[in-house]
Image (cartoon, rainbow, N blue to C red; front, side):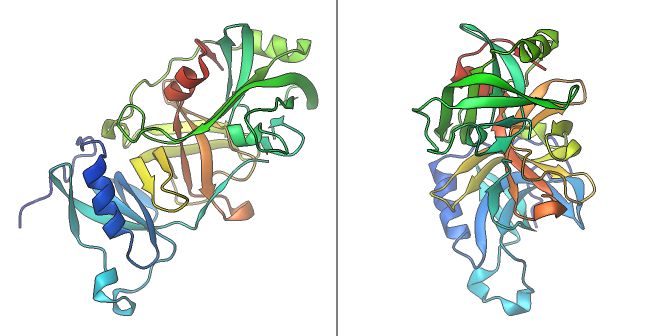
Length: 309
């Protein structure tokens, strides 16, 4: 049997998804419990391997003996002209992880970073942590920021832009952008922003990111460590929402929790990679997976320049 391209090579390149992939995926996720796909690394007993694969996400795994033949995931699939082994991962339906280091009075999330905007310094987090009781990107909302050094909430200012929209599905603009920015109008927060250092940013989304170790600070979970395991994640549920990438726990245990939305994932050399948006609905146990958006796209969509963290 012909060995699938890239087998045994964690840096193998797969073509970015297009209409052919979407059509093939619709057939694939019609199987029982399936809801999405991604280009990934195979995960065995909670441990990430270096073997590239095409992952199928399901609500619940079932023994093959309990599945009809039509519901069995094939051992290999062809995507972008390449044959890839498949992997099936059980992930409970995804939920926002908003709840503290920023709040709009209703929702809470994690401050991603500061940035230089057209009119001065701004704060950035996930849109769904900033959009207020009306869940709107039209009406400005007042934001408060938690500063751990003094263990106090400070009023910061109003939201100035909220973006909650899908990319076009190409490699350069693939997944959902869920991000917003807000004014920094309190001296204590201005001082914190002024003390932050410029961040390098990972510019491009590609399968070469798979296997990259990352870490971040969540408002609830504190220090989180993970590894990039999947890129170009396509979920057929919820109108076909897409995510740029997925980060998996290094030990198979819970990693992020409600309140960590906006967490900024950074590489070992400190470069900003992505913003955490959604995870599994496992409550205090924590999600083993973090799905989000490349921070370079957030920067460009919001129209800010230097990111500070």
